[in-house]
Image 1 (cartoon, rainbow, N blue to C red):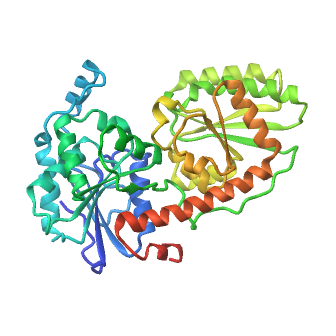
Image 2 (image 1 turned 60 degrees about the horizontal axis):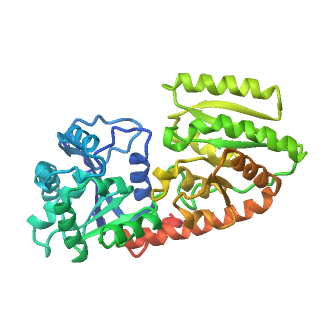
Image 3 (image 1 turned 180 degrees about the vertical axis):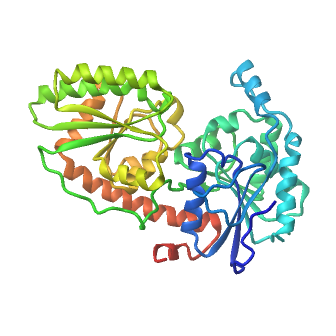
Length: 418
């Protein structure tokens, strides 16, 4: 069954977003579609997602098409990946013919044209395979352009070599455009796989440029600085390091003699009760040494408006992320933090350097170095605020340029005035 807004006026350009994973309600899958819609007001956006997806009051259900088949090969891919680590684990793209067929039927019913765009903003094996099949099985003179945004090297690393060759040919010919979120991943794909990347697409997450940017406030020594450890915490985000960093900050702050107070604001995953208990116990014991460094817990999975307020309330964002996972991939917390004009302390070696090298951030490796960098940012907070404003201005300009390039619209700037 289709859920379409048949009363909408025909736009100048139509974008067909392919996103199978809308069942993940608190991830970037929903926010990226919202960003595309808000940043391209002159386009009409259709979303193709998995069959059986249940509509929610929290979603914009206009032009939502639950037509994509269930992924029957997900378990097989996981088994192969575990069995031969680092191998090309995915079979022929013809396995995903049903996925491609569902897209083609929807495009035919909506009378898609050459000037329209098919966009997979979080392209996985299914979308990549379907894109190759669709381009090989349809006339280039009449079929829409396809653009695939690759968010992680792990996506391409598990693809069969023969499929990579077919993808490379279509990218070289310009029939498929590959996009990345970070310049680091773009360089890696071009160097390691020999596949040209047509551009960057750094879609914002919770905050939208020039619509929800707060006025920067002014902090003075003696205020309590809130250190945000935000988002859905996972091992690769370094959440296990927070107790050690917190305790190191107590030591470093005491050694410096600066009377600054710090409160860590930590979003705890509800199902990780044991980890939260350990954090609480270590915090309680450590507080007896220096009560000027404390920790506050908040639940994860909060509504978008509440999360925006939370990002706005903290003073410094802490990202002790694993560089094995984030050396090429971006982070939504970085994008939200930059737009919110927040100084950031992050793991040395992380991607997104374009947004982290404008006087708004400090890199660290050891727990003590993280503590030292937090103290340094707090001690010279106004200087880092100026850098954060520069970073926000840079990212705001960049995303409007990228929207125009990726979507093929010349009036993306209108979104700034809409």
